[in-house]
Length: 404
Image (cartoon, rainbow, N blue to C red; front, side, top):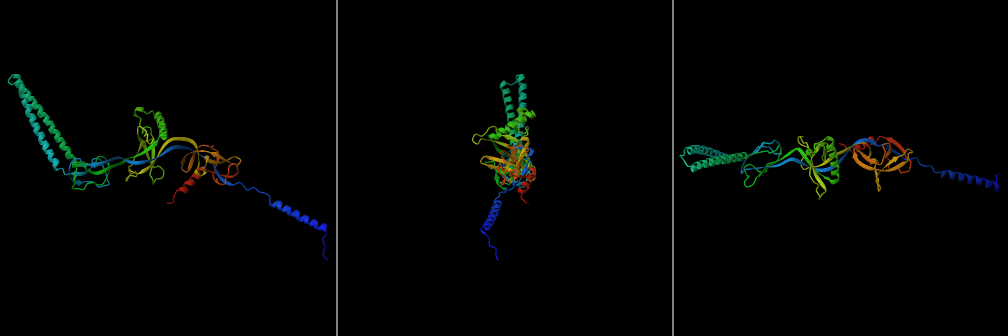
């Protein structure tokens, strides 16, 4: 026989189920805060840094000349290999010298004739001077003898000058290198007439060592460089009347398009005396040794030029990946002692080997977020993990280096 629940009993059971349901709902809606996001932080690297100015320049040979025929004649010989290096005075071409040898012979004979006439007129003058003392000739005869002697002396000088010019022209038939350098191809084939009516270009010669680099400096950078220059002049006690860029040790560093960094070392050796008002720049020149064979520095190439300006001590540097930017400018996220994120507006300096100099905005003991910036929010807590800043820079450089 079944048990039939009475109305009070059924009400009690319903209340128990309702209470249980309410208790279950309250437990499932309880909010549990997520743990703070994990981020990687590092204190700034404190290093001595050198400030640089960077420019783009053009390489120009220190010597660039055209070798020309200075006398007319038939080109007889070429005595060099195009594209090779030659020394100053090396024989490059020979122009047919026969005509000029004959001119030297004629001029030599004219000198001998003029010398003989000078001797003859000199003796006549001596006789006239003796006879005038005895009263055997007139003063007019003595004057004539003196005039003849002076005329003969002048003729001798003219004949010697003609001989010297004939010898110079004969020497021009041997075309030599005016400077040391790399000689180009021949511009005229053997057997052609050259130098007739114009100084025919026979070849070109380039002096690659040292090598010049020309570049322009704007007004602001120029004023900064001049201030550094004046300071070095004062420190070294250089005589202002003899001052030069070399004495002030204004160094330059140069790198080509296929080179990492700035491997070539040089010095600033020239600058224009005034600023170009149309461009607001001044042209300057650096000089670099280029004694490798073959030389790495080739005239006409574009080059990256870097000029060290000032060295500063104990500057904070952070990884490039830690720097953010928004409408307010560049910033860093730092973690306070309570593990709370704080935004710091900063002034950026130059980049050095994967690190960025921070001019203003952080302290040496600040913990800068370098990884996990997307998860960090100013004013929110984080779970920081401390690493070394230099380690991050090294790993970033390795990641940027292409595989061989």
